Image (cartoon, rainbow, N blue to C red; front, side, top):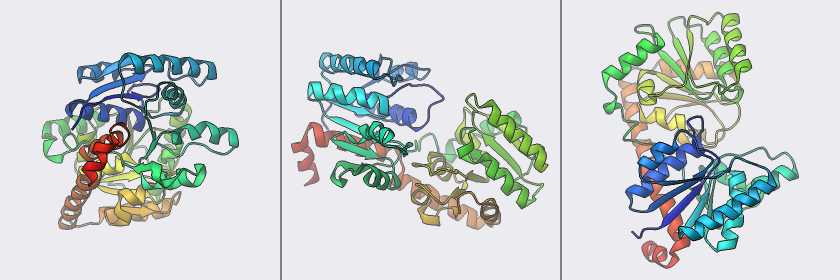
Length: 387
């Protein structure tokens, strides 16, 4: 495989980021491993030192700004980087930086790839025009079939430009066999989990659309005092919503059962402690990485039946889907997951792990993305490989 210089562009690289940051870091590591040159431009953040240690270069630019003048200045700075470092291709992952990258690529003649990480708000013409830059790449990566359909419907993107590359799970990290008993014991102590209690876990930022309040309603309807529920995720400054969740816990009599544990630094161990992972998102998930991670770790998964959840859960073959926003339907799905016999649970866990390894592995994601790069940088070689 030939080596190219790839510049990924995004707003920031901090630990509070979601799929955009995770995808950038995962791909940067894969590029270095493959012998390519990985470069990233962002406004910085606490992930930058690790990125650099892993072999990538980082360029700090004020790419969080949505000010048109600043975005235009960023385009000039990116064009200089492209020329100075002989960049082969630019990959933009967020809207404001994508505008700057688009203008820079037009100036330099370098190919542009964009990744559509979410559906974005598109209620008016101005919003749709701003969002549309994510379809301006010569190739547009959609992180799920759901997102592919969305961008074709809303933005009229030609299907020939779109490549569906689902997000990758690091199966070296999310491997049940690699989680030691000591890590699980430590987390059990930190979270003060009761011995022997079945654990329901919702991993996700503490924000309304992630569905924490809906889960509390479902738990109240389940009426299972033996259960323990863990809400894993930072409120990221949403103190009012956190207080609302706490008030609902008290109102429903769930204060002893439900624990808000904040951000977790050892998610593989967290999944190992969970019997059921719940993803009750009120809005459609563009992919739903926590579903795939939970499956990789052998958890039973229950999720809202919209967005990319049916793809990740094999349309119900690898988990339980329920009507979005329906607490009773969620409670019934959780009850079914908990009712599995040990033998059935082991069988389903094995099938889920195999499904994730086949469809959502980090290795596949990186290889598919690099193949898209080669389509644009070296189309003749790409065609020869396809033949």
